[in-house]
Length: 307
Image 1 (cartoon, helix red, strand yellow):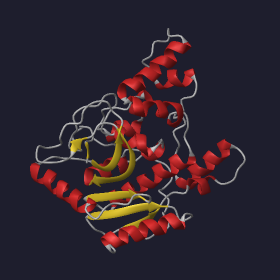
Image 2 (cartoon, helix red, strand yellow):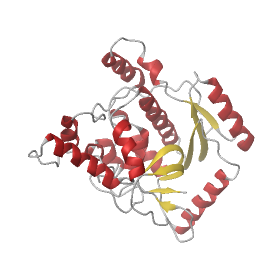
Image 3 (spheres, one colour):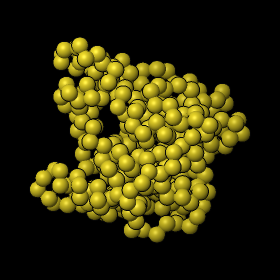
């Protein structure tokens, strides 16, 4: 079962009225301080969908953090302004971080052996052309942009869940879907429904990181059961996917959305990520391993599929 929302400050208002209630919604996330990107995204979607979408003002973490001189003060200001807690344990820059994140490592390992074990775990889980860059940069740093993007995607899910949507399509503002993208998605959703295949998340655009093959979601479908995927700039959430993201407690330990979403349905090579309460809750109580996807209830983990 999914745990109820954690305590803390109320969800901040996005500053925009919610569009009329609908079982299906297409939403594009953008920042008001980037009117060029907002306008280009809005114009493209309007050419495809008319008024059948909404522009969602994303969380501007840079503005929320203010101009205080110290990083600690800026993070505190960001958390107070957005009603979240940033996961302080994200960066891995020292051996002590490795030992903290990988509690299964033997304390008898030397510092060099511990660090190499960490790199081998990531390399074993992810393709070699993906893992090196992630080790060298993305697992070492957590930026204001990472936090703002995570909160923006979370707020879209929170709103969709609160309004009882059956399907929420999410685009970031640099995505340019083709005229066929949404009709193709809806055909696949209908096919899965008719076949009785439950799902939480469908990636419309992503990059495969996991080494394992991805089996078909159904013999009649072009979708695959997703492994670990990143670049979460275009995806769809079912009602169960919205519920899991909105209520799992992600707001209490914010880290990059590109690592949060895939951890809900596939193994993440970092033990600390898999043990976070929000990940454990969204996976239905399954924190340590990946496996066959479930139906969003009864303690079974999330199911992600991809095109």
